[in-house]
Structure formats: structure tokens, C-alpha cells
Image 1 (tube, helix red, strand yellow):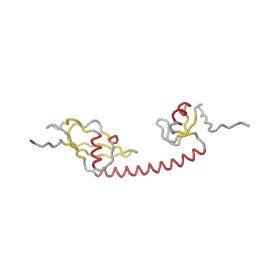
Image 2: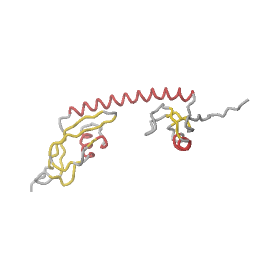
Image 3: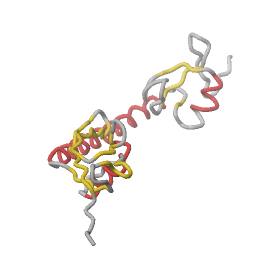
Image 4: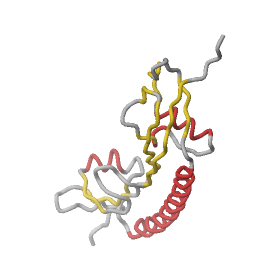
Length: 169
């Protein structure tokens, strides 16, 4: 009678090992995909980091229930981001004061962090990596800045850069 090895790893048609992804892996596949990878990559990276598992019936059932929970959490997050995008769209414009000379040239620049900080001051949780600038703002004026909140939700906000009011002596 042939003996059966526990957790026998299935071989793919190209000689690699077949694994079931438990997380999204860049350049490999999405969660729940059955992929074929080289043995070393699977044994030394995917399996120890919990990114993949051996495709057994039990693991397939666990993955389905996990996917349902992840999808519910993702839908809730998307709904929150859409609500935040609507709040941002209602903001007429942000005003940022910066040190500038008489011609309107800034001594520094207005960056993603400055815009994020101003939005956080209005109780909108926008991180600096969500702000998409096409270069630093170095002049006073009105700019339209795009915010990418994630999950393909984008919104534009108007930013007015004005010179810092200095007291006259």
C-alpha cells in the first residue's frame, strides 16, 4: 500500500510548486489565486510570510470565509472614503500662508505635507501620500490639487497660497 505524505505539495505543469495565495502579492496574483512558483520562492518567502498556503480542501474553505470578511471590510472602507471625498468636495478652498517676497515667490515651497496638515486641521484625515502634486508650489496663487484617497477614489481641491501676514514695525 503506498504511503501518503502529509501536506504533499502539488507540482504544476512547469515543474514548480502550486500554492494558494492568502494575500495579494504584487506581480504574482490576487488573494485566492492558485499560482505556480519556483520551489525556493514558495518555501523561503511565500509560506513563511503567510502570503500563501498549500491548496487543501480545508484551506480553500478557510480562504473563502476570510475573503468574505476582507470584502466586507473593503466595502466599508470604500464607503468611508466616498463620504470623505464628498466632505472634501464641499470645502470651497484651502488657504495656506507661506513666507514670500513682494513678487509672490515663496522662500520655501508648499508640499504635500502642508496640504495634508491643512486638511487635517479641518478634521479630514488626508495623508501626505494621498496628495498628488505635479511638483512643488513655489509661487503664491490658486492651484487645483488632486487627492487620490485610494480604491480609485479621487477628488480635486482648490488651494490658495497667500503670503504670510507680517506685522509692520
